[in-house]
Length: 444
Image 1: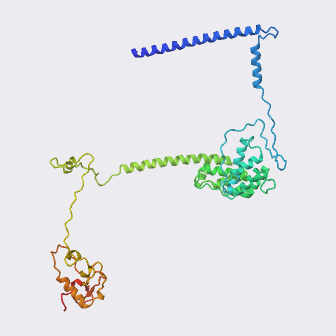
Image 2 (image 1 turned 90 degrees about the vertical axis):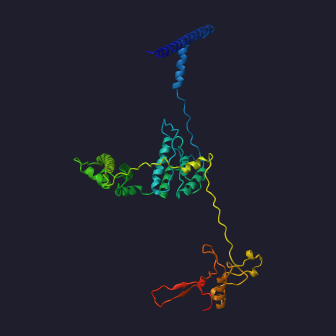
Image 3 (image 1 turned 90 degrees about the horizontal axis):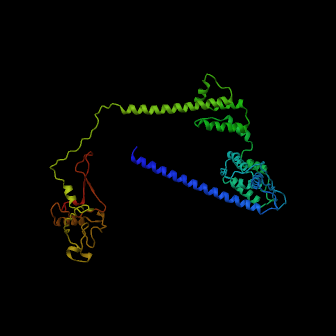
């Protein structure tokens, strides 16, 4: 044992001895205090010579306290309140003897407005009223609470009218009532199924499991059986007919076929569990087999192996040199290339001649004065033959630059009029398109 461990044990021993000494001192203090109280009690008894001896006063005090603890207080009888309008006591449902209300009860699900939920809705409320019988012992309280849970469908307005009539004690109102059994009958007849027994039998005879789980099918089947009042022999036939085909065959092909409804229910549950386990096992192993098959599948092509790129050590890295000249956080900008200067267009214009009036400007398109080419609205059909020839001569007389220069020619572009010229008489050849700019220089 190391020295550090020995030192830790020694510290623990010292602490234990200290706690023991503190406990002994506390016990001595309590004993001394008890002796002092005993002496004071004897002095008090000595000062009361006329009273009987009180040698067993402590024991008698303890017995009196125990008697008070075991004694139950007398319960105050419950007084049924009276309707102030007609001076008739409200209907009361006294709880059973010794009943104590459950403090925390969950809120039942509201009525969803469908006829099939009318009876289950009342059953949910009856369960709450049974757990808190003292709280909901009056019929008017039950009716008001029930109406507060009817928040859907056509029954919502009906419940609001009844709740208002009961709350305000409108005894002459059509919707007023103080009979819980009558209220349930009215609710079922109005928003439920009047003959629920026959409906349950119809559902039982037409029950079919399909794709729903077995436990869900069994729960609905048993509920319809109890509500319809069907005996076990008939219910067994309906149960066998409604089972899934595979599950029915698994139960029916056993060595011992069940003969009662309970036997069919238990055997079908066991076979359903076996089927679920078998399907899970098969699904897992099928996926594993597929994975292995695909993993070791041979391929006619060799596997692709990416070769590392070998860089010439003697090459100059221009990007690195450029980036090294930049400041931290600075990015390289693209160089600005200046645009080449544009040459002025030939021909008279306001900018070249220095005139500010349009009256001396000649249009490049129609040859007339007073407007530019972009403002020209003249059509080829509106020009005379002489004007067209004059326009052609004017266009040919303009000075020309090199072929690379962009010079705008006086072409009639507005209507894009073209002339179809056919050199030959063959129908197979495509006619040649001759534009205005291709006209001859002078009259033919």
